[in-house]
Length: 70
Image (cartoon, rainbow, N blue to C red):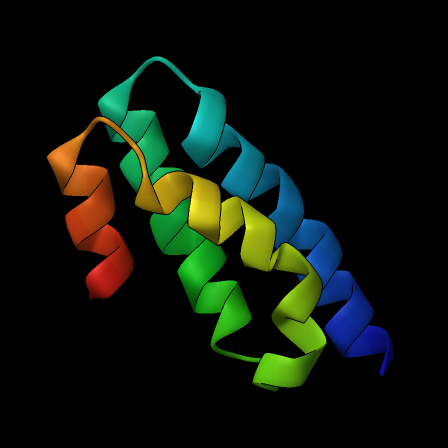
């Protein structure tokens, strides 16, 4: 359980950076790191991060949206 909480705490700022940073390379890097973290926990434990992913889904950058699908 502590590992799951730690993973969410690590993923949240990465998703915020992916949403808000002006540099596309930083957005993609942050998104990749968050994805790697989120894949290590059960989906039900990552549910609170879903709003960040929804926000990324409407990103104006096509590469960010594509990266979400990978």
